Image (cartoon, rainbow, N blue to C red; front, side, top):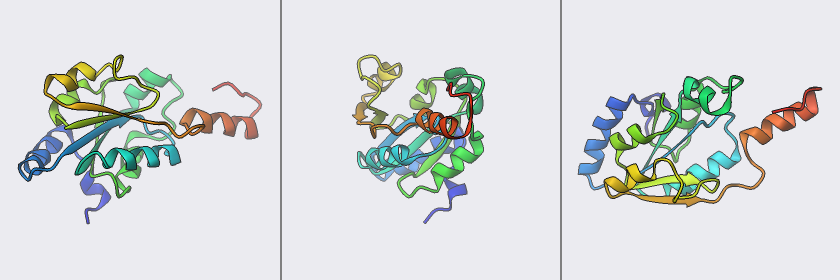
Amino acid sequence: MMHASDKILTREQLHDALIERRRNGERIVFTNGCFDLLHVGHARYLEVARNFGDLLVVGINSDLSVRGLKGEKRPLIPQDERAELLAHLGCVDYVTIFDEERPNVLIQTVQPSVHVKGGDYNPATLPEAETVRQYGGRIEIVPLVEGRSTTNVIARIRELYCDDSSV
């Protein structure tokens, strides 16, 4: 069994690791996200994603790109800690951090058989859909766990512990 630290790779290391896995006929699944405040919705989503193939690669947005997507107050958890938490999950085979707001360049490197996104996305409007289709990959949309999101966790904490309830 791999140690969590062995699962966290640079883009170049990931590319090299996947060459061997592909040679062995393994089907690569990829997903990406911020994964700030890891919660049960994330865990269930990743477990379902892993079932679409033989190994799961998770791309996480860097702190810089999370700020671009979610605003200056995010992320709550630094990128290295988010990567380590994901690497500790048994269903995750590799984790890599990317600076871009969208994973298109990383997807071109990984070229997964299956690209998985949560139910809050639509394959027709998914920004990286064309990248996936260009090399013959497919997109799978996994239903969200209702009421489970980092935004909801932050709102609940504010509701319980702060006077300011804006998220």
